[in-house]
Amino acid sequence: MLARRYMHEYGATRDHLYNVALACRNRANQNPAAVMYDRPLTREMYMSARWVSEPLCLFDNCLETDGALACVVVGAERARDCRQRPVYVHHGMVNYWNDEMPYGEVARMALMGAAERMSARRAYDIGLVSELTEPPGALDAAVARAVVLAGYPTEAVQGTVRALWTTREASVERGFAQAPQMIALGNLPPGRQAELFRGRPRDHRVR
Image (tube, rainbow, N blue to C red; front, top):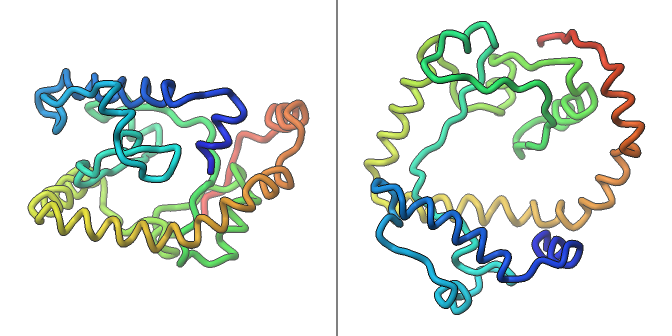
């Protein structure tokens, strides 16, 4: 539905979608460690590929070859000591709702915004994260879980992920159907939003 709307609004065609898929595949073709390293993509292959959900075909979808992913978020003080150059997050929006999260928590996160920051313990207690580690053990913990998943049969991992996604999408689709109306209700005109952001206090409360 979102892809159809984008194509309608901006005049995008399947050739434009092909260019996106081709760019991703080209990067893989340059990486010897990539699954698709020696498997180039042509326009003919793209245009004749089976539909997954029209207008998106097989090659518009990402490969289920990640095994495991982790995003480590720490304070700026600790980030300075990391081996890799950190990416500083100055602003963000809450767009995640775990079905098991209490409704009150979801409402509080959406309404309080940047005035509050959730502690790791609170995030764990409400099911937003699945594990806590003591610093500096986050990377080691993530790698250890990735090694475990990578050792499982590929078909079993893919089947489990598909089953979880299918179950979740059943409720997500209903939400997407009402998304435009909900977004319109929850957003002020752009000029007013910019004015409010400029005047917002910089301090926050951690709970």
